[in-house]
Image (cartoon, helix red, strand yellow):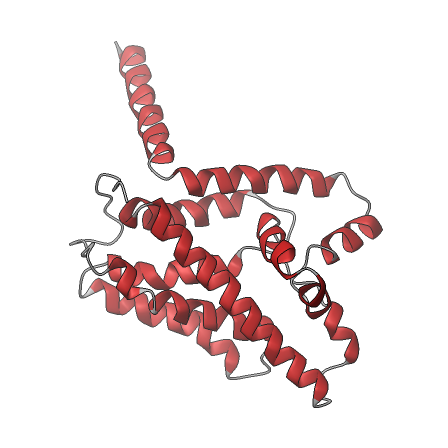
Length: 224
C-alpha cells in the first residue's frame, strides 16, 4: 500500500508540473530554446564562441549594423554555462507573470524591458565613449542574455502581490537593482535598473488583473 501511495503521489506531482508548464507556454518554450543554445555553446571552442556571441550581441557596433537581428538573437543565449538556475528564475518570475496576465501581455513586458533597457544603456555607453570616459573598444563589448527581460518581469510582478507583502518585495527589488548604481556602475548596471523600472511602468498592462492575498498564489491561467 505504501508503494501505491508513493506512486499515486508522484503521479499527482507529475501532473501538477505538466499543468504548470502548460499554463505558461511562452516561458517554457523560451527555456527550451535556451537549453539548446547552451548545449551548442558547450560544443564550441572558446575562440569561436567569443566571436559567435559577439555577432549576436547588442553592443554598439552590432546595433548600428543589424539592430533587429541582434535584439532578437541576444535574448536566445545566456551569459554563463549553467542552464538550471534559469529554470528556477523563469518558473518563479516569468511563469507567474505569464499565468497572471496572459502570454501576449507577458511578451509585451519582456520586449519592452529588453529593447528599451538595451537601447538606453548602449546610448549611455556611446556617450561615455564620445566623452572619453570609456575606451573606443567598448563598441564591441559582449552584451547578450535574458537578464533585462527578467528584471522587467520582476518589476511588474510587484503588482501581483497584495499588501503588505508587495512593499517588502519592492524594497528588495529596488535594492538589488539600484544599489550597484551607487558605486562604480557599468552600462549593464544601468540597463538592469532601467529594465526593473520599465517593468514597474507596465502597470497599465496589468491593473485589471488585480493582486493576490499571498505572494505567488497562482490562479487559473487567463486567456488574454
